[in-house]
Image 1 (cartoon, one colour):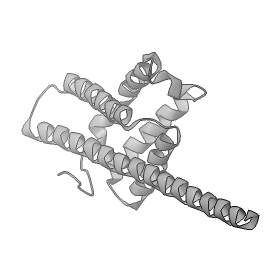
Image 2: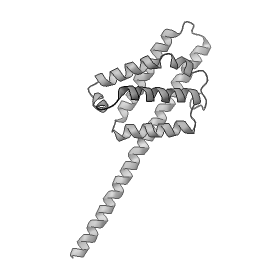
Image 3: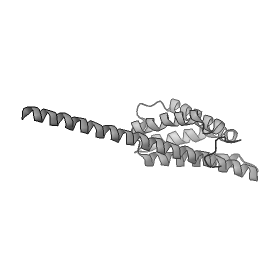
Image 4: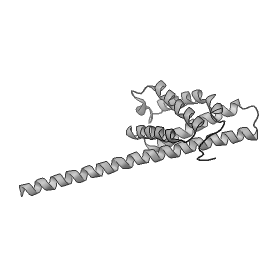
Length: 166
């Protein structure tokens, strides 16, 4: 199912545990010496709601054009605060584990269908991570290109001034 367009039956399972998992995720972020500095001045409740909305739209609608637009904004926001990619990946791992632990607790019967839904949820989260890292990388590359062009422009300006002095 990896990279599927329309997840079926996944949001219902995630919805029942997402709020608790996000609470645990943001507690971990706030308690972590390296990550807590990224939260200074942030409205955690707003971030939780935005993240919940993102997951609901992703698990409900799949990987459509709105998804890619949303992920572009999310990836750019993480890159703009200079969140290192390894923290980004670590956060996904933490959140995925928190979701899986809670979903397993809620499952009374572990049918093949339920196991398939769990597999689909993991696939969706990993697809989201993959796209998020690509967006993050693209933002960084664009920044490098811009910085490189700025250096060239300043070099040209400097060379022109030096010629005027000669």
